[in-house]
Length: 357
Image (cartoon, rainbow, N blue to C red; front, side, top):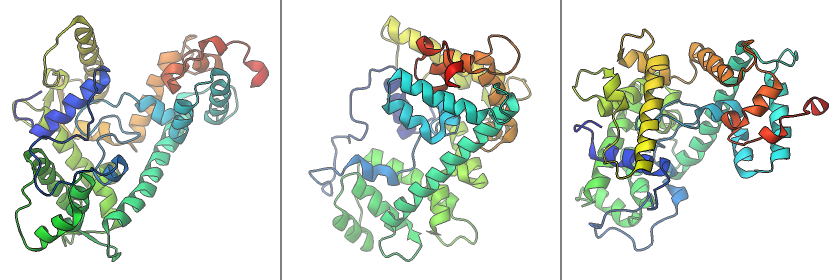
């Protein structure tokens, strides 16, 4: 990645890649050794870290750190049912679930799924993810609004954020009240500065430096706000853009994260990384195919409620499994390519399906 990338973003990308290659063995919530005196001995549970804006946004094609969302197709095909496929690996039961989903996607009941039907389904599943984010946001908002006045100040949020990272909440609150230096470690300070910038971006006019529940939703889930979507794109471009022209070339987009390739297995995975990103850049993001991705093109690509993108996605998904080349999907084809749509291998169960459908 670019040498100008912020340190905490480089760390996030390094962690994401390590997870991707299955070499990730350290706790992503671990902190550096130079802890301040405010740090408690026993860190809080990971569940409390939900007040930190997530890097992964369900139903959005790119992570906030610039990585492609490798689960995107499954998220927009399965919606909230994705967890059922992850938790239940029994092939026969998964096949029945997939048959049921197919019958719902097949809106006109002709036993064939068209691009328009798939587009409609993708939009519905994306809306499901939106509604789930709204429900989660309500819980997170109440957790950081201790006085229940319906507004959260930056100080209220950063107290809860630092507490979720293992700092002593009462001591942090007292130091903030007295305008004392928190003396947090460098990495935490960098994250706080980035969050503060994002916080004020989410503060809709008239800016009052307070976030209500809707503004807090934009803070945690920028895909819900057009203005925050622009900000998210700006952040991604800043992290990937090596020459500072606020546009992305193919070479900038496919650059590997910081680190070196140490063995052939890692080299093969790096090759997959480059190949996947090159295809996405050339075939999807670069709308006018001029070899340059502008902020406007990236914004259209990132917008989960863009109907044109949903139709293109539907066509791509159909093309993966359309063996008879009729530009539609039959049940047998979806079952045969079930791993692409659901993450479950059901090829052995793709025969004799008519009796159940």
